[in-house]
Structure formats: structure tokens, C-alpha cells
Image (tube, rainbow, N blue to C red; front, top):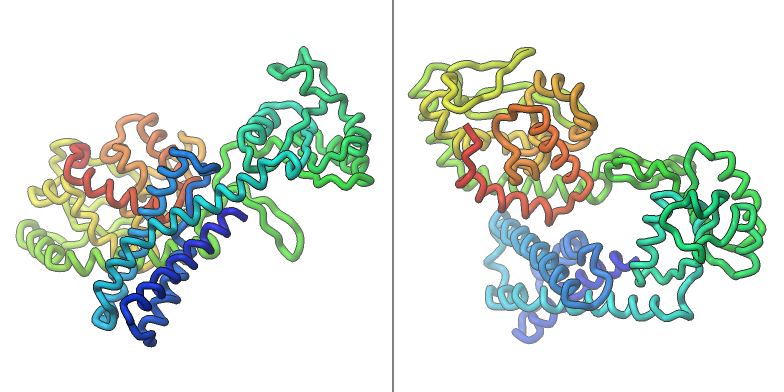
Length: 454
């Protein structure tokens, strides 16, 4: 609810400040400005939000919110500039108005969102508004849940304690005052103490006990949440859904569903088109250099695994004397004799990857995502690294989180590849447009300084 309010407030503020600026500058409302306000509202709603960790109005929260909003606002302005350039409509707008609007608006958005956050925190922190909760079960996940409830005062919850059939000596670090009784005592305690919420955190193997407990709690008015221990596993984009009214839980899913998928695809098209347009003279020059210096094709095509593990064809400028796409492909090494003189320069600065922005426009790849490995390497490492194939739940990327963390180039050990895969899975868990932009900007620095590409 807080996130929705923040997004809505960002859209309202962005449009209101633009309209106010028009009134101050005596700018007439035209069709172009009406379209601009609609686009601004949509972009602000999609892009602008404060971090999930922001829970109260304090220095750290304000700082994190400011950084997040500035990144998102920069993205919004960049999209508007691109649209103005691509549609040749920038002349219809007042530059003075738009510059002042672009400078002032993020400050007002930050103030508005922190004010909303503070107001919600004030309401939920008052004792009269707090809902009383208990947890059925004592395990690592139940303890973690209890810790989060007690730490996050903005949830508006007061945790009474736990119920479990085991004694204190078997429960580990839990105070005697936190164990309220056996599981059989739970229904009576809920009725007699006006408990609002019950979290059932019992092992999934005890599903019959969960069913029995639910039956016993039917004559209470408490809200009941089931938090099985399956959620302690390494999950990717865990969420709930329904099929014809039947609830299902996604344990491993792509982060790009619904509006998130639309936002990701739109950003890919905008960024890839811009880069190809700006680098077109460079692309032609490289193509000519490759063709004139060594025999063979200009573009090297190789099979890789794409979305959901389906085969795709990936483009690169040819940098080697050979074109390998077999069951065994040796990774490029330092001073590799297969690399051409021109290819060595291209690979040093990752310029040979530029044709992959065509793959992005085709929908085979994304600007940011896990880097595609050769099919032979996929088949090798999927047997050695747990969760390796999960990285294919999204389109492969021209760049990725693993690459900007230094996990690029030759991988000489399984552990090095495991670190790369862990970074890829972290990207899937935490994806946002802001994260994509951070990775893109860091990629530029890595291209100029990293010495692992050869």
C-alpha cells in the first residue's frame, strides 16, 4: 500500500509541477503538452519509488530515498529526451520551462514521499492501532519472522509470542516469556486475548498438523497466514498467483512479468536503439577493418542459450581466425593465438559485443542480464553448479551484474563460475530499472579499466 501511494504521489507531483510551471511561464496548454503530461504520469508511476528499506524519516532513509529518486528521475528525463529526439517534437516545448521543471520536481517528490512514509509510520506506531500477532511454531524461519516484526515498527504489529509442542530446552534462543504454550493451547489463547493475526510457521512435512490447527481456528476471527519452511530455500522472484481462482505460489519465476516485463522491454528498445544510432559510424569502421585485415566473415554467429534455455543465435564482430561452435569450445586465454590483431583490440574493450544490441532489438537478448555462455559451457557447468540453469529465466544480457563485479573473461575454476552464477541469480532476485542503469554506467568504467578481457 505504501509503495502504491509513493508511486501515485510521484506521478501527481510530476504532473502538478509541470502544470504549475506552465502557469507561471504563461505557457498555453497544447496537444503536445497534454501528451507530455500523460507520458510523464506513466513514467513517474513506473519508475519512481523509495527503497523498500526506507521505513521512517531519518537521515539514512532520506539519503537512500534521495539516491533512488535521483536515479529514477534521471531515467525518466533520459526517456523524455530520447522521445523528443526520435519524434522531432522537442521544438514544441519551452526549454526554460522543462529545465526548471526537471531540476525542481525530484526535490518535491522526495519531500512528498518521505512525508507519506512519516505519516504512515506515525499512524501505525501508536499502540491503539497495533494489531496483536502470535506465531505457531519455533524454527529458524519463525525466529526470523519474529525478528522482522519487532524491528519494523511501521508494520503496526505487536508480537505476543510463540506456540510450540517442544520444551524450551529444545527451542534454542527464545526467552521463556516468549513461549506462550503448546499448539493445542493456541485456539483458546487467540479467543481470550483478542489476537488479530496468526502466523503458522510449521515445517511443510507436518502438513496434517497444519490442517488440524486450521480446523481448530475456524471459530476465531483472527487472520491466518501460512509461512511454510519452503520459503527458507533459495527462491527466485517468489510470488503468489491464481489460475481460475485456484491459488498457486511461484517459487522460481522470471522477474519480468506484467508491467515489469513491459518496462524492461521498453527500456531495452530505447537503450539499444540509441546506442546503435550513436555508434553506427564506429560499427561501419570496425566492420571494414575486420573484413580488410583477415579472411572470413565480419560477424561471428554462435549458438547460445536464451530465455528458458532455448537456442538463440548471438552476433559478435569476428575476433578470431577460427569460428568455433562445437561440443567443446576452449575459452579464450591471455595471448590466445586464435585471436586476430584487430580482434585483440576489440576484445580488450569489449567492442566486439556491439552487434549484440541488434540481438536486443530482435528480442533475443536484453541490454542487462546474465551473459550468454557457449552451449558447450552451459552443458558442462549445469552439472557442476546448483541453480546454474535458473539464470536462463530471463533473456541473456549484453552486460550484467557479474561482469561489473569483475567476473568476466576466462573462468579457470568451477568456483569462479559459481561466483558469476551467484551474481546472476542476485540480479534476478533484485531486478529494477534503477539496478539496470547502475550496471550500464558501471560497465562503461569496467570496459576502460578491466584487464580480464582478452
